[in-house]
Image (cartoon, rainbow over the protein chains, first blue to last red):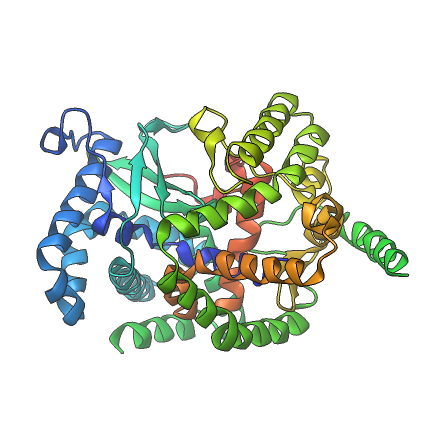
Length: 213
Length: 239
């Protein structure tokens, strides 16, 4: 009998960043400095390392000042996510139905939601170890995924996978899959239900309220 | 009496469960109204009972001990995994898990130490729900069970079928069984504490959890490698 078992599994989504926060991010054999950020796994490791360093240096400031925390996430993590693609995948058919203005507003709202969620989760973890596996090339050219495993005391190891695509010679993350749960698919399901009930405009408004609040 | 009730429930669930797989972003949830009220109940129970207990557990019990407790309960669940490995025709993995059970139960001090993993026998996770999925039985309806959380018709069958494969079923000391059951509930919950803020921050936590649960089960059935066309956004796969 597992009380509320799985009730909280999805919550692990996005919580990988904190893992990096204090985790022993295993650097490549050549050391963190020599990571090749032009390869998918090199990039993921480099970002993890950078995040780890920043949090180590400014932990107190970041805890007491959420704005600085979000700005840090914005600076270190955001450039490596393909938000326009994520927004399109999350909205699905609704993306095509939306007008340019709505698309832009949704994109902004979704982006700041993720930054906040990510940032807040960032400070919760401690003492996890995270190991990365070499990148696997996807079924199509210009696609890859990087798998990692998060281990923490008293918990089952959690596999986490970054799905990436190459755009203009740069590898960008478009989905994060935690323990088999895809971030994009999950938000997609939630938002589809929301749209069906109250419409796209209402969803965008709620997102905007949530992120400005 | 209880057995008859169980078999009836089993039959009902199998019948209901024999539907095709629905994508996790548009699942079969005809009981949504009931499920939502159960979810609200579970959320309250969690807030006032389970979560505080899990937080206290994490605060008081040191990490290595929590790992030992987790290993102990994972070891108790290994018979279920072994049986289902064989039922799915995964004989090598099943035998490897049998080895794990023997090694960890003895050298691993009743399962608290995962010695087998160090010896190259990695842990697997199989259950009757995954076996039925392998056999082509659909998940049926999404269900929210009181106290127990998310499930489906298929996973409800699994939950009932696995009971006699848990060694605790044969322990006659009722207070010991209850004690261990409560401990298992708490240690299980404690594993997800860091993720609470994400769920409560969702526009609709019910749907977020539903999608997550169904995705996770779908991935488990495919041993971590679900077919890509099930990703749910194939129509946008033009990037």
